[in-house]
Length: 186
Image (cartoon, rainbow, N blue to C red; front, side, top):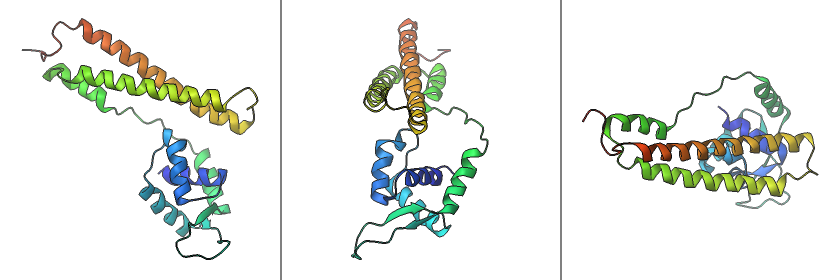
């Protein structure tokens, strides 16, 4: 149930409309917590019903005007409660790893190409994160907020570094397999 908390965080950073939130999710929060615009709009309605947010009054009433939302004290309290709550790490669930396990018994057809594709995607994501780091986190960015945001970005950089290293190793292992296309036991 983290989407409402992601939205509360984003709205505390800056009151926004649903469309602006969707764009912000696409540009930053979405790197570690993705949501579609339908999910965001549904959750805005729920948060408003619970009294956690409210629509800001429009400067001029107009039909079809975007509603901007802000967090109410109850929403801030909920976010503080959730932030302080202990949570266990989530177990890793990765389809690629499961497919590799299955390949050990049914054969590896198609897996090596997909490993290469994954490696390319992770290399691209790592390059993007490093660009963001260079652009947004220079030595002059040393507030507590900046340091916490940089810490989140570092998690992304470290995860992408892990995946690129692991995928490179996996592809090297594929090169050493005696017959990569045959399942075990045939």
